[in-house]
Every structure is written in C-alpha cells, then in structure tokens.
Image 1 (tube, rainbow, N blue to C red):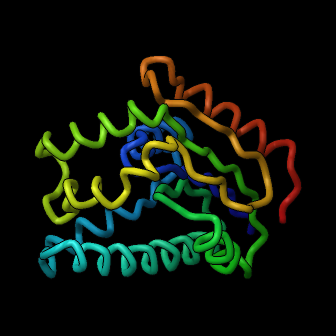
Image 2: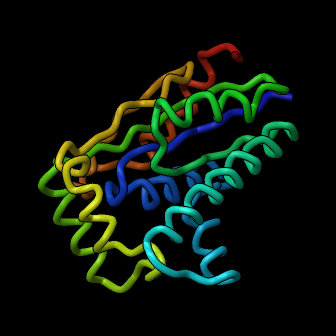
Image 3: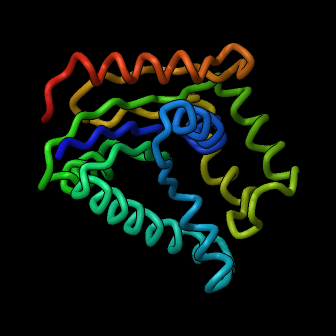
Length: 190
C-alpha cells in the first residue's frame, strides 16, 4: 500500500499547527502532532521544569515517529506537524516508512524573525499554551534561532513548499492543499 505524507515543518510559533489543521482538514487526512502527544503526557504524568519539558519533547517525538510508522504500514495518508530538524529527523522519517512505498511533500513554514519573536512573546503571555511548555524559558533559549525566521528543510524526497506566515491573512491553506495533491499526482513513490 502507498502512503502519502505531508510534513509541516518550521520553528516554534511560526504558525505550523494552525496551517497543519487547515491543510489536514482540506485534505480529509488525519493530523499527527508532537504537541498533541506532549500535552497529553503533561496531563497524564504531570509537568515540571524546563528540563522535564525537554524530556517529554523527546518522548513525544519518539511516539510521533512510532505513530507515523503505524500509519504508513497501514498505507494511510497523513499530515504530520512539528519543529523538525534536518540533522536529527530526516533519517527518522525515512526509517518510519521503510517498509512501505511513500510519497512526500514538505511544507516549510517561515516568518520574518522580528514578527516571529513578537508572536512567540504574545503566545507566552496569552495563557493559551499549556504551562508545561515554559514559553518564557523557551523564548530565552531560542531567541537567536527565532530571529532567523526559518529552519532548514528536511532532506526528504519530493516537493518542498515554502509558506511565509509573516502576514497570516495572506496564507491560503486550501491553495496549499491543492499544490500538495498536484505534487503527489506527478511524483513516483520512493
């Protein structure tokens, strides 16, 4: 069975989750997210300091790739979202689907660095994120990276669509979903 995987990647606070929700909804595919797992772990086993949050992030990534593996084995199409890193996660993606032919499209979400820093500060103050994320400490840790506004794409086969969310009003998730479907229609499995 063939699995199609849309990877939504980008820095924290860039708008990945909002975009991933809209794309998954438009495609009618399930959405797998690291924070969905992490926040479930916060609620079931508790949350603590920033080192604990990092530990749960690592465990959440392990579970996310296990989830992807199971979906790929079943031949299901999925949208997967997280703050992935080329050196850390490219091989994990490829290992997760090694037993099934897979086609990939990556959506790399980017943003102006100053806007991203402001968004991240506002997100930390909003009270909408689970307190276990420790947004203030995370902002301190990632400030230099966030100023760049983007991370490198994963080294996956297939199309990489770059989406700038500096002005989220200009982003068209349905159009991105159409580009994803067109890319899958024109590519061969890897």
